[in-house]
Image (cartoon, rainbow, N blue to C red; front, side):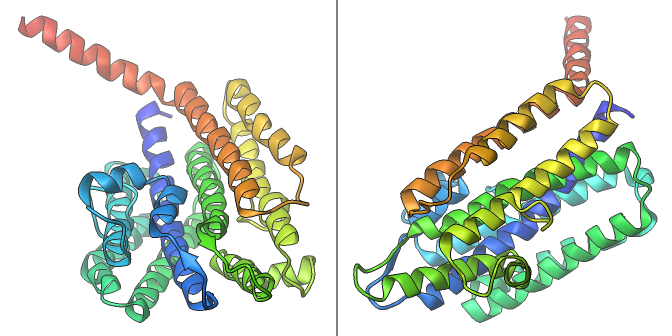
Length: 325
């Protein structure tokens, strides 16, 4: 497979996963706001830091407030991680290699793009409209993935899609969990119950509440929720499950030893993690480390499988410049 095609597949999957999980991230935050007790505070600037977008936001906006942050995360094409920008990028990547994918995929992704272009602005008009539009985006994106899984051969192209999807999903799962660190609860008797509601919102944001009840217990407790969402090997949105999918896909590809070594660093980090302290500061530090491991894994995959494409492009540009001179 051409390095150029492999990279486009990888990023198409990442962009689609990012769009869905950003929608989940926003809906989770909205639910958290509804569940906050009197006296609790929520810093929108902290939310931007959790998303890793605070520096970019500050380049284009003056102060962090809900309206501007929602526009930045949903509509603003100056933010390459916004929902609309991600779906647009996924569409452009798909358009360049339509012959590799099932024929209906282009129609579904183009339909998702057209829906988002038409209705994304409605998501900035109020929390009810926002929740409805973002849920529709999540459902439409899930239909794309269902079609891919059910109608595409699990060949090299599929495994590059799987790499992008799993890596982005693991990263965004840690960020959705980390929303809890952005909430300051009052130091009174209501804080424990409020924190439990926050963890329930986190489970709901990842569609994990029912599975948590079945496999862990009916009581929502911070340490158990964090351990489940990070280390459960069976639920498809946990970091451990995503790392397993990444290793499975890498094992199909040639010369995968370097990326696998980096993936196992993340494995060891999760295995060593203790869940007796899930205070916001402690959990935030652990999640930052996991996100750094995932960034290193992306770099290793990119260097191993996509660098030839970039090197060839640079050489071609250099030759063109020499000829012109």
